[in-house]
Image 1 (cartoon, rainbow, N blue to C red):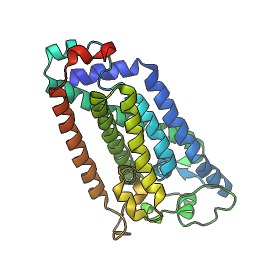
Image 2 (cartoon, rainbow, N blue to C red):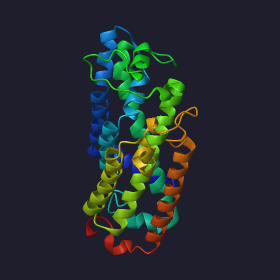
Image 3 (cartoon, rainbow, N blue to C red):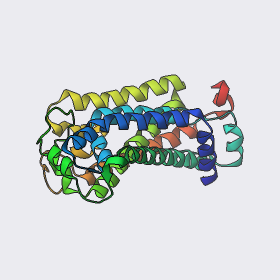
Length: 282
């Protein structure tokens, strides 16, 4: 299992697709947090290094766009090369599946860690290292002193967390969504040509995004997996508990969805004829 995961990671690191996806993710995040940096510079006060990612994780437009990089990164799953048949001659389908699933999880974690570090590097010249919220970020959450800047963060309940807590939870939610949708792409590619599987995954992502955009109330975010991945759509410290789900509820939703997808993929693999469908013959 671990050897398959390691081999898959090596192939990913040798592919231009991996670096294009990372560049896209980092660039989208940096563009998204530019207004925050300009707002802090206008106040003449530094930000916390961690606040850029927190702001990024509470913006559904940038999160949705960055997800496209994740799909691009793993779009060749499960048949990444023409030697998959030879791999299956040496290991069971269960171990092969476990290795591929582990690779998808590791790829999502690595992707968001790089995005986090890129955002921290972008803010580093005008930010401090500390586990407390900055003055600009606090005022922004209170809708105070925005003025001519386009910075936007009307989520004061998020500040009930420490910055490091918020970042760890935000990364976990983002990874959970990326991993879940990667597994969905895996399942689609077992049943459909890769181009069509990619299209179906993007269509589902668009449906999740439309659920967030179509309703004015945040209550309906719980019915979108994308909404469950956004930090601000959760009850924190008991605030908005009648309107928003708790973090544990969202992680439970992701856990159940991931388990169901893995079971469906395993059932699909047991019935799959790799001799005639793998690699270039797919």
